Length: 84
Image (cartoon, rainbow, N blue to C red):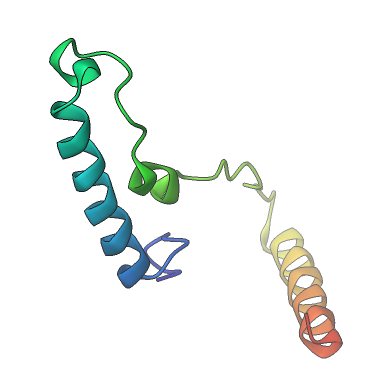
């Protein structure tokens, strides 16, 4: 799931989509649905929302890249060692 960028598992996503379909069906039968107002928010859309990932970094050369790589790996090992 992490490789595809999803933050929830497929079962949770399918359940959210089912709830969204039921919400839309109920809404369509209401006065709001007939007048196309107050449409319910989709839960699945909230679950699939992409987080802003602004931590992109460029490097001047391979040495700078290797230094940053070592720092990232060292931080990951510390987090893993601390049990988080």
